[in-house]
Length: 117
Image (tube, rainbow, N blue to C red; front, side):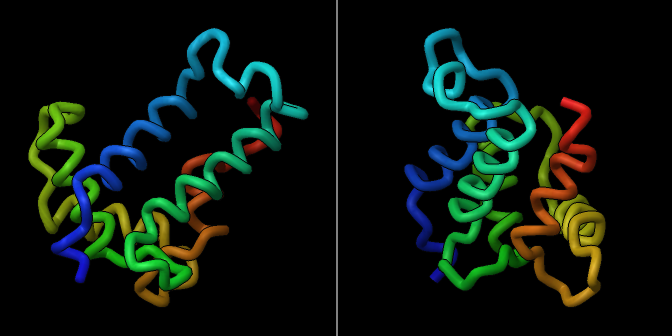
């Protein structure tokens, strides 16, 4: 059940986003990335799998809501993460309108122009 998701798992997903935004000096990203664009896409696919809390192959609104609320609880976001903000994010990411976020939609939303890195 999604409400039973480990805070540790949510924390890992949130930390991975922070590393993706700004890899610390000496992080494996500095040594293994073939190109910035392909490395970023690969890392986003990993993060997507972490966000897919129930391993269904898609990220549902309930999973994003849990992660958004945990991120707020960890002090990473000052604003309240609520159903309305969550619905808006899902709508933005869900380009095919099926109500869930697929990996390709997630990557494209976060990294809309992968060659412009």
